[in-house]
Amino acid sequence: MNGAQALIRTLTGCGVDVCFSNPGTSEMHFVAALDAVPQLRGVLCLHEGTATGAADGYGRMTGRPAAALLHLGPGLANGLANLHNARRARTPLLAVVGDHATYHKQFDAPLESDIDALASSVSVWVQRPAGSAGVAAAAAQAVAAAMAPPGGVATLILPADVSWSQGAQPVPALAVPAPRPVPGEAVSSAAAVLRSGEPCVVLLGGDGTRRPGLEAASRIALATGARVIGETFPSRLERGAGLPGLERLAYLAEFAIAQLGDVRHLILAGASAPVSFFAHPGKPSSLVPDGCQVHVLAGPADDAPGALTALADLAAPDAKPVPQQPWRPALPDGDLTGESAAAVIGALLPEDAIVSDEANTSGLWLPGATAGTPPHDWLTLTGGAIGQGLPLATGAALASPGRRVLALEADGSAMYTISALWTHAREGLDITTIIFSNRAYAILGMELDRAGATAAGEAARSLLDLSRPSLNFAALAEGMGVPASRASTAAEFAGQLRRALAEPGPHLIEALVPPLG
Image (cartoon, rainbow, N blue to C red):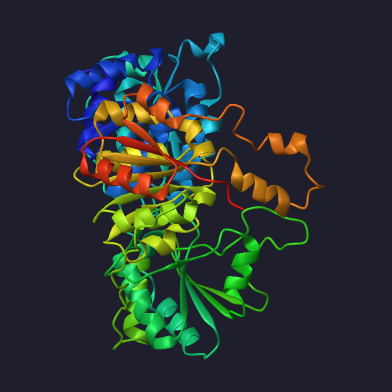
């Protein structure tokens, strides 16, 4: 058995059953081995950013890694932005990066690069087996490293001759530790803080934004008066009618500072202490209010839902969680705006949907409009590297057959990985993509004003403008095999979304909305 076959048999034995691929010459023996091991499904992506983003979406929904097959250092570099997002989401993910044959590297061929250095910037584990005899053991270690709490990217660098050489055998999966239980002292300390009478906020992150953590946090809030806030960009938030609602920390630093206000105790449950996304003149980097003490109930590798439940049992033994009541907005009429589009989505969002949210400024009204819709999952742009939404939806759909996925996408962000639509069509995925087409990098226009730069003139504003010519996303989608339409009124948008949700397979709606402000 050659190294590639042993590698793939080991991966399937470890629970890895899909590989999002953009292969090249160095990976051809891996590609050929897919026929010998059909248990690993190969999914072709036309750009490495789609492959890595799709692996992120798959891992967020299943809790186990997908593989992303990348070609040498440049292929890894193309996929790096969404590996960064996966790192921030703490998603279990296996990056398999093909490399030149070991004996060929000394010749400094045109595609030679420092793969190890690139991979180490986003990975919790990086290794390159020296020969085919060690490749299966390395694969098992990679999967275990990716799944070890809190989860992360493991990168296996695969020299071409390690793939094609004989003498390899698969190995069994390694044991993966469970999240660490939180010591009783941390729970009792947090309970004492909650009983102090001073303003408290419990900040949720990681697995704390799933139903068990949300319900425990809701009990705590009801009994103690503490506020519960979620991190700005949760990797996966369970929400909707029947689950406790969760206020999220604002993206803009000045709004987050006002949101935290006079808080004197910040209890972290799976989240990190909040910081501003960017530095701005005269504004603080840390969002923890002056005079506020930070208490760690559960770190990223800890059992946050278990810790929250233990804290609720101690501080709020008789309290019951307060569920969000069912509610949908009425279908609007008139012009199509970010606000009216959110109302349409809230009115029509299917039960058990998965939302991949990269709507950016056009999505400001989405949380309120969808809070009382049937239960659903919400996936966000965890690392801030745009171009994640369409690939993330790809992986989520493959991970969750039978569930409708909505990709809510800003037009500028969509262009980073627009070729993901081709994979949606090829795989027949039940993804409805909504492009909020405001023909601008609107969020950068806002940041230009916030940054305190000198008054922006025509040259500066032109770099934030997506007109001249305007993009036609319906035409782009049709060219990649995805049925598409364009809407300029709320009624058109509602009719098109209703039809898209009623039909299997992918669809795209280009929502022509004005820029924010």
